[in-house]
Each structure stands twice: as structure tokens, then as C-alpha cells.
Length: 268
Image 1 (cartoon, rainbow, N blue to C red):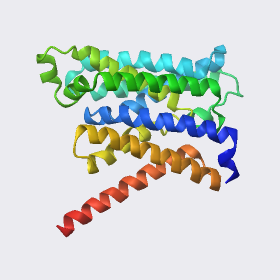
Image 2 (cartoon, rainbow, N blue to C red):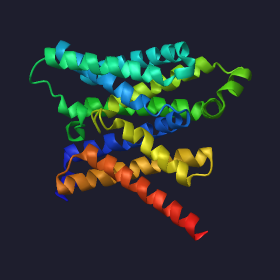
Image 3 (cartoon, rainbow, N blue to C red):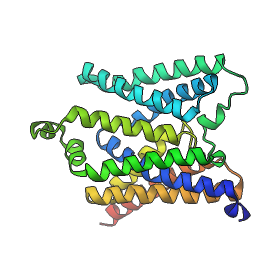
Image 4 (cartoon, rainbow, N blue to C red):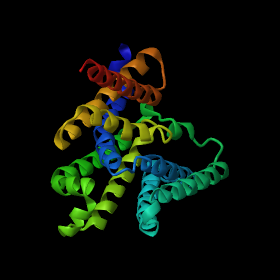
């Protein structure tokens, strides 16, 4: 267990713990609003920004963040244009993100570190990465805590929120932008191809065991933190991919909860 005392592992643990708070929190709102796939969409667009960052010599995560935020606004525009087929907005933006990323990666330097952003590279986090992740975590927590009542109403009954006078469009954009921020900093931890799991699976678990809105928020954070800590320890000891280990742990936990719930139903 010498790896636990190493500096790179401690940075990985700090970054993982921060993302273990914000990603499940944002994912919870997305799942309840039936926007689970937005994680995949924004992560693929963010990868295009990362590629451009490498090409022009700008901090890749910052460029990915800008791309993801721009994509979040585009998604909201398309959702309004296709009200009856809102999921089309996600498919269109995702396709554009993948297409642009493929062009930028092939046009860029052959030494461009693609895999670390596709599959995650939590052990390579530096101080700048940690400050960025910490800043995003602070913003997300401040917004959710200060706007919890409004977010609750919009999440469960958007029409009622509109009738009550809440600026629904503003809150929709705000949720999308916060999601873009979280995904942009999470792709270096679990990777663009896996980040959606960290958004959605803790929420899926909480829907099984939580009995209230507040309890659900606490549950998704607890599940996210457990998966990150356990995943990093297992990956460190057995020399496994950290991002993949975290995701597989989440899936295993979800399956266990589903089996337990089924057992209770059969027993009752």
C-alpha cells in the first residue's frame, strides 16, 4: 500500500473526491429530467475542445470547458426547436462533437495525448487541475445549496415552476452550464467515454434506496465518494485502469441494490 502515501495518488484522491461530489449531484438532476445522455454529448464536445487546446497550445481542460458550455447553450436552443423530440438535440450535438474531435485529433500533433482524455488519467492530475476541479466544485455546491427549492420545483414540475413565475429558461441553461463545467473537469479523471456513468449510475442507485429529495442528494454523493475511493484503492493495488475500475464498481453496486430490492419484494 505504499502507493497511498505517494504524492500523485494523493492528488488523484483529492481530485476524485471532488468529482465524486459534483458529478453525481448534477447527474441526479439530469436523470430526473430525463436528460441522462447529456453527459455523453457534452463529453464528446469537450474532447473536441481538448484537441484544439493541444493544437493551439492552450490548457486543454479550459478549452474543453469552453466547448462544453457552448454546446450546452446549443442543446437548449435545439430543445426549443424540437419540443416534441427533445432528445434530437443531444444526438445532433453529439454527432457534431465527435466529427469535430476526429478532425482535430487527426490534424494535430501525433504525440497528442488522446487516451488520457478518452479513458481518464487521474494519476497525472497536477496542481492546476486540482484548482480547476476545486473551483468547479465550489460553484456547483454554492448554486445547488442556494437554489435548492427552485431546482426541486423545476426538476419535478417545470410547468408549475413556470406558472409560479420562476425563470425556467434561465434555470434550464444554468443546469446545462453546470453540467458542462463538471464534465469538462471530469474527463481527465474517468475519461470522456466513461464520465456519463459517474453522472447517472449513482442517481440510479439513489432511486432504489432514497425516499426523499434531500435523502437522494445525500445518497448520490455517498455512492459517488465510495466508488471513487474504493476504485482508486483497488486500481492502485492491482494496477488497473482507475476510471474503468470506478465505473465497474458503480455498476456492481447498482446490480447488488437491484437484487436486494427484488429479494425484499419476493420475501414480502
